[in-house]
Amino acid sequence: MPPIREKLHDWAESADESLTRLRARLGLLHPLQLVPYRSYGTTGRLYVKGRLLTDKGIGEPDPDDSRWHNLLNMYRRFDSNEIAGAQLSIRPADGSYHPILTDEEGYFTLNLAPQLLPTPVDFLWYPVEVALLQAPAPFPTPAGLRANAMVLIPPVDAEYGIISDLDDTVIQTSATDLLRMARTVLLRNARSRLPFAGVAEFYRQLQLGRNGRRNNPFFYVSSSPWNLYDLLDDFLALNDIPPGPLLLRDAALKRQSAAASSHHAHKLQEIDNLLLTYPLLPFVLIGDSGQEDANIYREVVRRHPGRILAIYIRDVNRPDRAALVEQVREELRGDKVELLLVKDTLQAAEHAAATGLIFHQAIPAVAEEKVKDEVED
Image 1 (tube, one colour):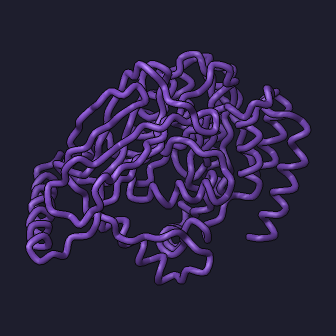
Image 2 (cartoon, one colour):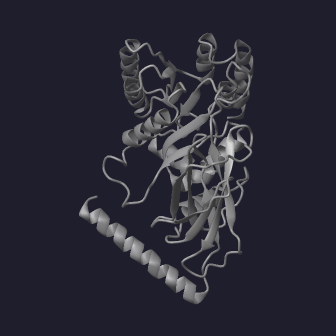
Image 3 (cartoon, one colour):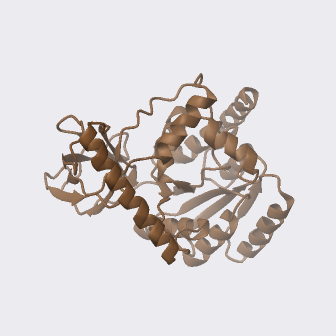
C-alpha cells in the first residue's frame, strides 16, 4: 500500500475509535447488527464470512420510497460503523465451538471442517450459527445477538454451476454511462431497481437444468463493495432470481493493493477459487460487454481447460466493446468453448436449450417474462 493511503487509513481508524469512545461516554451508541454473508463450501469445508456493524436503521425497501430516502440509505451504507475487536462464536451443527475476533473493518471469516452438517434449507443451504459474545464498547444491544450464516453446498448430482456478474448483466445499472449509473446506484432501492427483461426466468431455468431438480448452484461475482450486500441480496429475492453467494469487493483503503483492488484481479481470483473448490463441476459464465468480463472469462478458460460449458456476454450497445468481445470469441474457438454476444436474455436461453443446458420447453416462459418485464420497464 502507498504510504499516503496507509496514513489516511490509520488516521480514519484512529478517528473512528475516538468517535466511538465519545459516543459511549454520551450514551449515543447505536445497537449492533450481525450481517452474515451467503457463502459456499463442501461437505468437508464450510467458509463462513460476515460483518459486525452498528445498526443504521435501514428498513425494508418499498417501491414508494422517495429518492431522498434512497439516497439517505445509501449514505448510511457507506457511512458504516465497523466494530473491530468484538468477540464472536461460530457454531456449526456438530456442536463445536469456534471463537473469533472481528478485524479492523468489522469482518469475520472462518474455514470450518465440520463433523456433522445441519439439515439443509431449500436443498442447497446449510445454516451456521454466529453469536456475539462481547462487544468492545457498551453498545445498547440485546443479549444473545445471533444470526445464521447460510453456506451453499452443491449436491453431488448438480449438472453445472453458474457464475454471473451483476451490474449490467442482471441489474440495469448503465455502468458505461456515469451519470445514469449514479442515478441508479444512489437514488433507487432493491424494489425500484430493474432486472434485465427475462433474466429471472432464464436463471431459474438454468438452476433447474435438465435433471429437473433445481439444484444447479449460482454464484454472483461483482466488483460492488460489501456495503451494498443487503441491497443486492434483497434485489435477488424480490425479483425471484436464484440466490447465491455474493462475492463482492472490500472498499477499505488499507486492504486494497493496486493488484487486488482491480476489477479484473478481484473477479479472476474469486472465479479461480470456485473452480478449485469444485473440481468436478463444470460452469456456465455470464457477464456483459461493458467492462472486462470477456477477457476475464477467456483467462478462466485457459486456466481451467475443459471446465467451461458456455459463456454468455450481454451486449451493452457499445460497438468498440462488441468488437473486443468478438475477438475473444474467435480466440476461444480453439479452446472449443462457445462465447455468445447476446442482445437479450431470450437469445441466451435459446442457445442454452439448443446445447442441452435447459429444456426447450422453457423458451416460451422466458419469452413471456421478457415481454412482461419490458412493459413494466
